[in-house]
Image 1: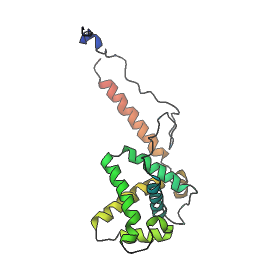
Image 2 (image 1 turned 90 degrees about the vertical axis):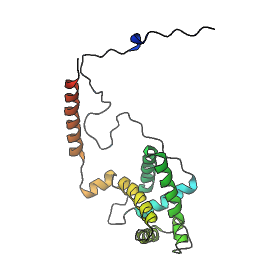
Image 3 (image 1 turned 60 degrees about the vertical axis):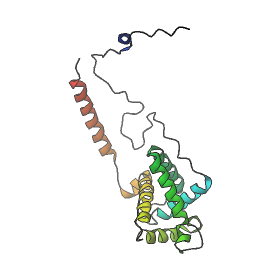
Image 4 (image 1 turned 30 degrees about the horizontal axis):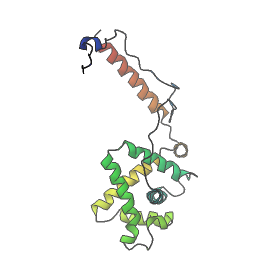
Length: 194
């Protein structure tokens, strides 16, 4: 049996073009909060139905009460946002967040706060419990709670309705970042040797 003949290495090299590099932009070129530019979002981090219910209870307890904007499907949106975010985390960090959900769900029973797990409490009772847990002497519990609160509240404050209620418009910032990027890309193509 003969081995396959491979082409010379010189033939496989890609020749450098003297044309400047041009970034191709799909979709709209105007700045948008969530552009539809062809990028696919990650699949949500896998969770069983029990973990999802526990996570949704934590979301209900962490989201700010009125007079903050109350969105009808806020729990669904935040769950999807955070679970997609978890796909981009280091696998150990995502698993740690998953474990934190499990621990926080059982924490009311373990701390003798209630006979029910967090998913059995109302949003108000859950918020009171998580506030008390945030002042715990156990550093690990406070750190877990901070991580989950940060993920949930960053998703909450990323909603367009919340931006309108806060009179916050990040579009000028996005425009400035895009202009800076275009300048930097222009400089990098000028520095390339021909």
